[in-house]
Amino acid sequence: MADDQQAPPGVPHSIFELSAFNPVARDNPHPLLKSLRDGCPVMRDEPNKTWLLSRYKDVRDTVNDRTFVRHPSNAEAGSITSRLVDETGDNRRTSILFLDDPDHARIRQPLAKAFYARINRMRPEIEAMIDEIIDAAPMSGEFDLMAEIAVPLPVLVIARILGVDEARLADFREWSEGVILSLNPLRTPEENERMMTGAAALDEYFSQLMIERRAAPKDDLVSDMVQLQARGEANVEDDEVRLNLQALLVGGNLTTTDLIGNGIWLLLTHPQQAEALRAHPDLAAQAVEEVLRYEAPVSLTSRILAEDRAVAGCPMKASQPVWMSLAAANRDPDAFEEPEAFDITRKRTGHVAFGGGPHICIGAPLARIEARHVYLKLLERYPNMRLPEQTLEWRALPFFRGLERLVVAV
Image (cartoon, helix red, strand yellow):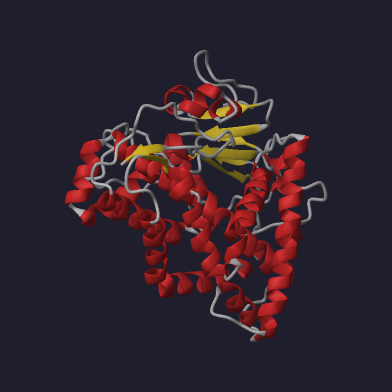
């Protein structure tokens, strides 16, 4: 396939046609993704200077291929990926989300070790926090599940893990909403200002918190990381610790909010599945995986070619970005039997909702713990929970999939 080959008529021609920028795709991207996967599974979006993969095998092979690079400064000038980096292209201002080895492994390994150890120790406390928030929700009538549970819960959990001031949860959510705009390559001037304001506020907060934890350690992840530094067990600079703790705060609450909201929406629109989970709580882990496969919070991910080579059977060039539709791959009939059916009782091939390879989502274990407990707790507390008549509004942030509101009747 040549660089200038376009998608055939009737198939999306641009990556943005498949994103929340397109109102049709925002409401339901899956028919468009199916037409792309069937009609042009390796698409060249020349105006945005990127490739887009949509078949499961191609996506899985690419996310797991360590020969690709990740940092946007490696991408072709003018490409959608190059717009994700700040004007200086300074790698020092980049979290592990975009770092390449050896820096990626140097930072991620001690961070992941400390993070996973803390999650394992705190699991009973995490589940107790979930119980507390759900128990405080209304027992009757109608309420917005996003505002009452899905939004406040993940930010409380990640705040407790990190050890940040829980009196400032509203600030952390606001700053996180600003920082996540860095993943929008078409930011408006107002969104750019909001992004920089959020990043500066988080920088200042975590800088002070690290100073405090060095002077008086507590039982939290910030203390864990500064102590690893002090013992020489983590070759990580202060700026790198600060950036990645911030990334955990941002990613740990926004995408988990969507995993909760999407999951409850799916269970309530598929009442037989909700009843199956009520009757068989041991299906909870499988239910989370099916939600991730069917309506994941993150729709796309990307890599960058380090050299000229063929990808998915097409010749491509060094520095060209390769974007992958996780949502399209997760409904590929070549990988999943009856992929359009939401069925928590069926064990399926592993999805790619968390990406793969060295950049697989670091927060995946925590998201799974939270979603599993939330689904079970909500179905237990509200045996008659249903969705009243409403018009669903999906968030307009490109490459993400989540509800603004979800009114439930209990």
